[in-house]
Image (cartoon, rainbow, N blue to C red; front, side, top):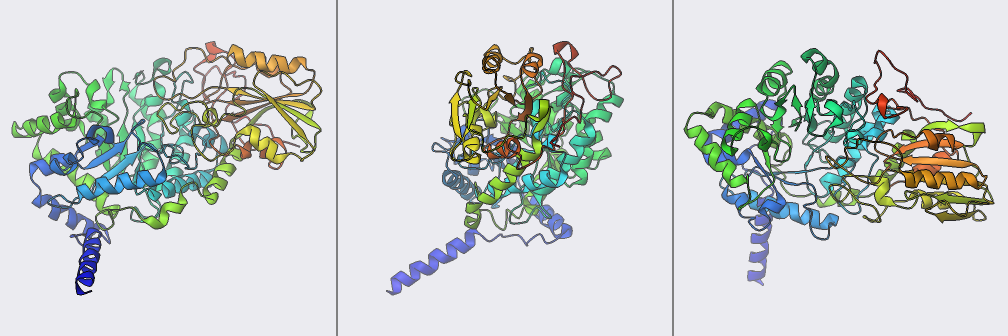
Length: 607
């Protein structure tokens, strides 16, 4: 019995020790600065360089002890590098496992774990998937966007993770760009207001808060303004125009106390932003007074000229504080080489110790502000936040407010929920994957039932109508004859960066045919467009009696039905000018010649 109690006490002491920091709690800025300076004074060059490294979990999956061996400062799960079963429980266990390795180092410096939670905790099965930013832009609602940021943070923190690579505060100026839906809109003033609101929601009143998560404003700078909307392309304009359009969001983000900023893959007038010292150091850190740390995009430094060592030299000297390095041992541009080359550069006096110290101070400061030294492991009490009813209601409200009514001939909408017969058609009516879009479970997203939870638009319609109403469904639009109305749900299928770029934004021939077939049934046709940007919809608009831009609404399709059946009047306003044809693109508010199909800010409502 004595032996049992002895072992119990030892176990309790171990658990308490695992959750107790060896550094005084950072109650204010003065204590944080003292902690950082004290810790920095104890660090070797190897330990400092380790803090500047962020590795993908796939890179260390078979070499997890490298987190301890090389004092790795951060780990991410990017793209599709998820736990095998992708459940919230597995995510939490993965986080705690890696964190336990990190705090086993000499100085017990914890990692910060990053993830692309760009519209909810969207890598995790069972999480609430919120509408993408383009839809939030259509709400023009600062308070609602702040709520979405806070709810997302709560679900991220529920798995222990304390850093989200969001919000994207790009100003999307050309709908050909495949990341248009990650932007709040084409107007810098809208982007700056909603970006700051999201950051405030995510980071809370204090980074040390129980539900607070480190936000990351991205991508600095000009990613939404590239020529022809080419992803990772070249933004060609004067500095005056560059600042006027693309900088306001970051000025406001810094005022909102964002503590991490990600560099853009793109270039400005031919110079890659990952090596642009003028903008990363002179403008961002010195002129704007950014006190957080700067992180690269996924392998972003590898697009700089020269060999890997030269790329490291240029990016770190330009102002990069943390390098996101996707590859592991045996792969080109891996984190072991980064560590080796950066150490050589310091020893050769090509990168100064002061530049290393500045980067490490910035990273450690954020870690102390996050209170991750004091509480490095996941808080089990937050687990229930993931996919909670409360968060799904916020998402549903965001869907309602994001829908933009573009046409409503003869007051076709709202529909009565007591109609005799409704035909629902189109490939996006009963597809949760299409409804959510890219960056959902996997990097590019995918069609089909890719996640548990959520409501498709078809199911939402069935949930809303009277039990006596007959609801039929056909992908191709057949069977509409005799129905009181045909609701056709069409548009894009999932995509993300790079693969989402399109030279032609015309609605597909398949979708056009579905709408035309519904029209031949001689019933009212309501078209719901699921898309990450305005598309060319001339024929579809003519063949519809009512037309709704629903963007990428996420898991809570019930919000769409709320608007269709009049439980909520449409309030959404376009965050992008809607072009008549491809020849008009790019078209943006403020252009000298401005004659879009629908202007920025357009949106009908019900009488």
